[in-house]
Image (cartoon, rainbow, N blue to C red; front, side):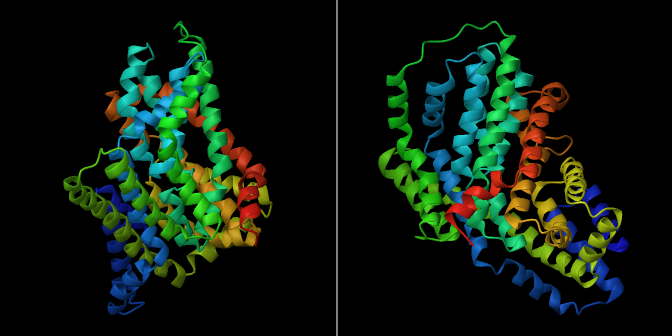
Length: 425
């Protein structure tokens, strides 16, 4: 295990891509220990990605790309603005609510940050918001796409843990809303100090108009979740339906997507999907080595030797995940850490859906904790702000996300009520 860990950390430290780092460290371990024939490496890599649910990843990514290209972001922001834009600090609330709505379409935190930030950041700067505040809020709000379905992270989690992806999707609904509203409340209190004047008065007519304009776009998450709930299609088939619907809207209804744009969008989706699947393929060898050396069992035994208390063990796991989130990317944590944690979760009797959503919230927090926080870094690039300047604000926003995480841990029904109601058993 020491050889495997040292090799992995060394390759990551010299900026070798994660997939190659995982594969090389596993290869070095196998060569030195001669535990399995080298011919089995290719077989394990193929087996690692030979999974029907993994087809959902490229289709969800492509659907999100299509909806972004269809220029639905202004429609979503107009709807959010009609509800909360008139409140003190309304633009900040519009940012959070827009990210929640767009996250239910894109399934990607970075896509959320780019789509919403490119439009709202200039508007917030013009209204007098500090760029550091806006960027910090954008990064944390964009990360809600990790929790709110149809999250690509949930798909990878479901495949890795063998948990129902449909239940993970449903389990993320209430925690996503709680986290989003927590960010909105804090943004409101930050905005009280500002002396901007409230905009126009509340208008039911504008809400109805904005809802009408955004209605077809908002049908996307309803089609995905509704189709899964009614058993019309699996999560993978739901992703394909989402692509078909996005193509229909972009080409025939909104007419913002041209046929000649599709090859470029498909190529971009293929590149992103290939990266993710290559990581999963390499991780299948890594996971085999961990299993062969019984590392997960040793970790579980070591943890339980410290304490058998359910909440204390969960507390220690969350602390570990929060620390790892500062230094590792989302997929890396899922692929490397989750197989080690599953025996602990099983021994505790924790529901795997509860664990999956808890992990997703941890990953959303990690996406905004320096130095590796990808969503925060993306927001900084769009807003032209140095990372150091955001620390004052991002610490507060991450703090309320941690409070939401604590609520989720203490009250499992916040996660399990919806999936158990609609998908019992």
